[in-house]
Length: 273
Image 1 (cartoon, rainbow, N blue to C red):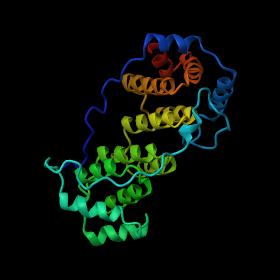
Image 2 (tube, rainbow, N blue to C red):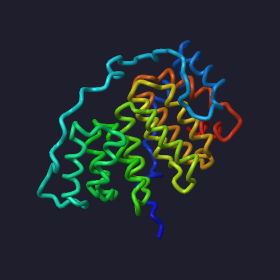
Image 3 (cartoon, rainbow, N blue to C red):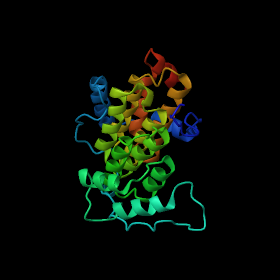
Image 4 (cartoon, one colour):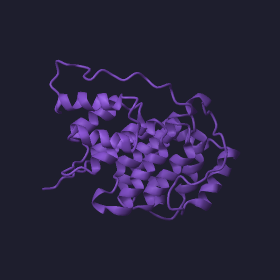
C-alpha cells in the first residue's frame, strides 16, 4: 500500500503575471540589483540557496516586516464544536494541552510528553495542530520530528509542506531547510515537491528577502524541477509574482533579464514567460 499522500493541486497552473508587471520587469533597472545579481551569478552552484548573503536592503523593503508579531494566545481546542472533525477530538485536546504547557519546552522534554500521552500522529490531527499553533514553530518542529519516528507513521506531502509553511511563516528558515535537505539526502521517495519550494519562495518574499527567494528557485532548478517546461514556468511565475507583490519589481526585472537570454532550458522558460 502506498503511504504517500499528495496535496491536491500540486501541479495546478498558477496565476499569470499581469501585462503591467511584465512591462515593469522589462523596463525597470537598479544598480543595487545589478550588484545582487552579479553575486548570484558567481554563487549559483553552491549546494543550498541560503549560504551567507551580502548585507543589502532591497528597494521598498518595509523594516517592520523583519520583526515577528508578538505571540498570540493559544486557540480554543475546537473552534467549531458543532462540526464533526476528521480526527480524534480527545487527542486534539490532549495534544493542545501539552503544547500550551509552559513547563514542557521543545525538544526531548516535549517528545517524552508526547510519547507518554500515546498520541497517534494522524495526518488530519497534525494538519489541524499546525494550523492552530502556527505561532509556536519550535514546538511544531519537535512535534513533526517526533511523529516521523512513530511506528506506522505514513509520510504525507501535505503534512510535510504544512510544517515547512508554518516554519517559514515564523521566519524559522533554518529549520525548514533542515527538513528539506534531510529528505533530499536520505529518501528519494519523500523528495520535496514543487509546492515545497513554492512555499519557501513565497515566505522569503513576504519576509522581505528577495535574494534567498531567487536562490531557492535556482536550487530547485538544480534538482531537476525545471526539466518539465510547465513546472519550471509555474515556479518562475511564483518567484516573479512574489517579488513584485512585495515591492521588489526591480530585483525581479534584473533577474528576469539576466536569465532570459541563456541558451538552455531556463532560457526557453524565460522566453515563454
